[in-house]
Amino acid sequence: MMKIKIRKANKKDIPGLVELHKKSSDYHRKIDKIYASNTNSNRAYKDFLLNDITKRTLRIIIAEDDVKLIGFISAKIKRTDPYTAPPKVGIIIDGFVESRYQKMGIGHRMTKEMFLWFKKNKIKCVMLDADSRNKIGLHAWQKYGFKEFRKRMIINL
Image (cartoon, rainbow, N blue to C red; front, side, top):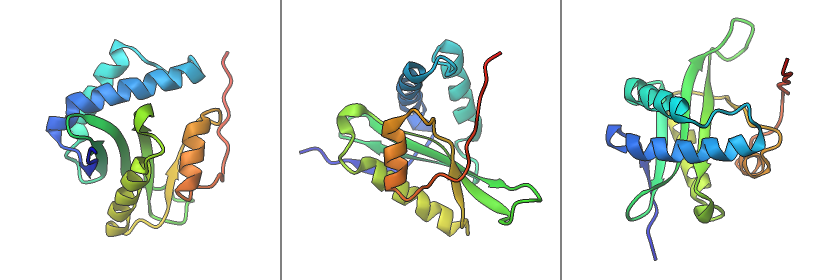
């Protein structure tokens, strides 16, 4: 039986993270063509990681089996607008677990680790955006305690 390790990502993980991000993008692209899944988006994600992976306000938690990365969750801490009560919030940017590893508690373990990071940084409110058609993602986020509080709407012109 393989042991799944959950840990903070570092620069050595960037190639594996780019590969997982590509799989996540491909999944979302099947939901709607508005999502980019191409060489430019992969390069942009790699550049983002190279620039930001060591910043104190960004955290990426990864899951790895014996040989490769199989999941990640990324989040940041952000100052809020003046009309929002908490001065800082946590923002879940993205999360993904390879399909053959889903329903094994890996996403839950990564989310729990991210919540510990938020609490350590005195964050009391965490937000995320999820496509309303992403049934797998919505189900997972709701299991972790998230609830809908706002709707983002879109129109293509």
